[in-house]
Length: 109
Image (cartoon, rainbow, N blue to C red; front, top):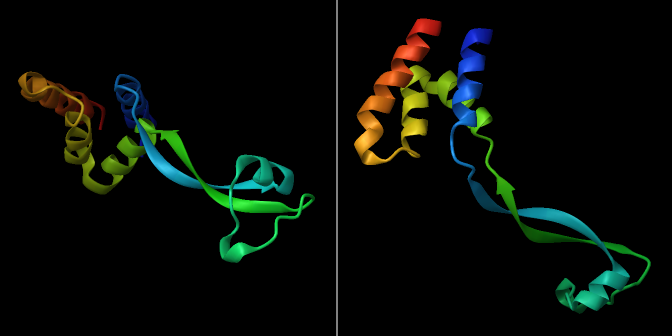
C-alpha cells in the first residue's frame, strides 16, 4: 500500500467517532485475591493462596478504526473504505461523504 493512501486512511480514521466492543480476556489472579473476590474454581477445587489462577474476564476494548479501514481497503478497495465509513454517517450526509471519500482516494491512488 502506498504511503499517500496510508496517510489519507489514517486521517479518515481519526475523524471517526470512538467506538468500543466487549470481549473476554484471560487474566491471572493470585489465590488470595480469588478468595477475597468470591470467585469459585471449576469442579470445586481448593484455592491455594500462593498460586495464580487464570480466569476469563470481560473487558471493554476501544476499536482501532485505522486497522479496520486498512483491512477494508486491502480486501475491497475504495468500496470497502466507503462501506466502513458510512456506518458512522447520518443518512442525509451519506451521498456527499461517499463522493468525497471516493474522490480523495482516487486522486491519491
